[in-house]
Image (cartoon, rainbow, N blue to C red):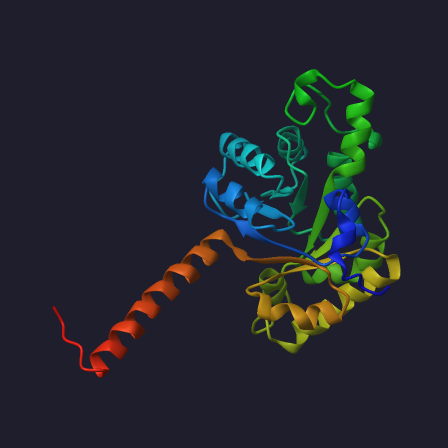
Length: 274
């Protein structure tokens, strides 16, 4: 399937519709519990942000603030949940998250259990329209359930070697919106030396191939935008690029380097220290 690159045609589509249409999308992990960060990322024009509740210190109250802030700037937001816990997944979605990124999906059985936790239509998710996602009970219950099932995003993180043998069955599950490659954990599971190892590249090609066969979008974490092109060439279109911490560190480090270079040039031109 060719990758559509004209982003001007996506106005009015939900995040789920854009991803399923194959538009390249990008956003960072968010690891610092500052709700202003979510507002700023939304103003930057990114496609999404992923709050990292697996590897950063977010409790439910913290997630609540972050999701409200994201909504204020129209930023689609997923939560990377720490475990396959239907109650926690349900809570994230009730708070108004647009979806979940679920780590260590090792089998089709794992993937189906995740879908059960997200989609009301499967009859297993706990239901209450009284939260933010249900507009505090102001929506008709059936309308809310239909809207939630139509828009909630499910990204299954493929980061274990054993998942590679079950890829086609995982990718065939229609409610899954993205097979998301976790290169760090997958490298570890494969016994690879790192993100540049041939075995990781081979695994990425295998996952991308399953995505193409089943018309399932595939995503990956990259450290910087410079790493995107080779994966895009494989048909991978969903990118989580760096983190809010990394963006801050990179910008602050650049300021320090710039001042050092300016001061060095001034001294070389005969300037004096004060």
